Image (cartoon, rainbow, N blue to C red; front, side, top):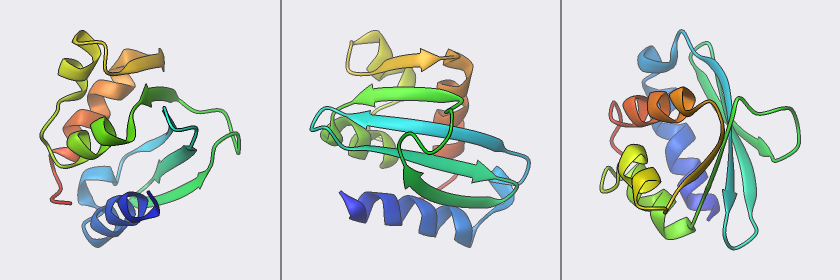
Length: 106
């Protein structure tokens, strides 16, 4: 799973323009028990362990569905509607993440 986190941060840091104005922390709680936070802060993306700080939004899904979301094969809104994604916090953050992910090729 560390490969997917690396793919995300590498792509975002190589092209920081879409995340330049962001200051948000997403927590991903995967069904296999892994939990990480994706921090987007003023053009920088990095991964921290879950629980490091209060997330703006928590997304609960399977590793398989996370990979599909990252690769553009599954939208956050579609995953939510079909019960593949649960969101704690403001749904707007999850939709914003969907928009941000569409700016990148992973």
